[in-house]
Length: 328
Ligand SMILES: Cc1cc2nc3c(=O)[nH]c(=O)nc-3n(C[C@H](O)[C@H](O)[C@H](O)COP(=O)(O)O)c2cc1C
Image (cartoon, rainbow, N blue to C red):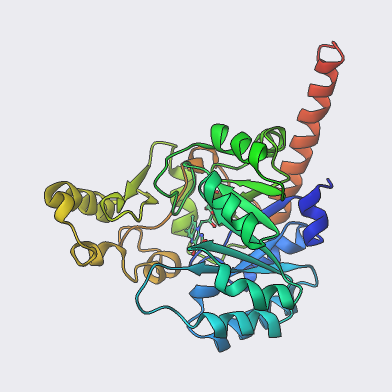
């Protein structure tokens, strides 16, 4: 399948694996890229720019296809070494960067000078337009359904995607709630040029996380995520568990007086224990409502082939309907 996104990134299928903390290691990115999508290494999961350079080199050993690096720009007083991260990306010969979080304008100059395509992940039309204005090549439009940080506007993709299509000139992919061929066709119908998936790619054979994480996603329904940190205006959609229920209880009790320090035990530094050790009640971890559509743990190749076959099948049936034929 060819779209503006496959052509821009030099990939076979318009399917991207979004950056994911403690999931987006070289194994994940290489598996997605080898299956014809765009795999993405999560920059900030690597402790130093040198570690990131090593991870990029490892990924290159596992695939000769294009892959990207996610650079999440955090609202923090002591920022990570972003210039060092950008240098590791450029020196590593990476061709695509997914930015997310704050406005990426300060990173764009060196990335663009190095010929790197930048796709910025946004949760609103106004932020998408800003990304276009500052020179991003594409955007990933992340609806309210998404795992991770959906922003504060709460606009689901059935509204957000056509709104983005009406306003944007650069290509965009859908993100949030995407799982299968139906998601891909719906995204294309609403004006996207492809789709980005997070949660769905965690439940794959190659995802380098503990089996408990994959089992939790398969077992979860669409009712099993919660929004946390809304009072801090840092809303995150996470899988519910004992720590999350405790966190929500604190939010209720402390109301507007709540501070980050009050919930530090539930949110800070919990990813390694959850993703690597499988301690599922250790804290809050991002997960999308799409868990309700995930019922198996295929390889990335099986998943992407299935999505493309299903999408082609749906498109053929729709074509038949459009020609007044009853589809088989
Ligand atoms: C476990 C997990 C960790 C994530 N970590 C990051 C991250 O570090 N940076 C980022 O930009 N997005 C992160 N995301 C968001 C994903 O890249 C993607 O936008 C999102 O998962 C899409 O929604 P979906 O889960 O419904 O597919 C994370 C998502 C999950 C599920």
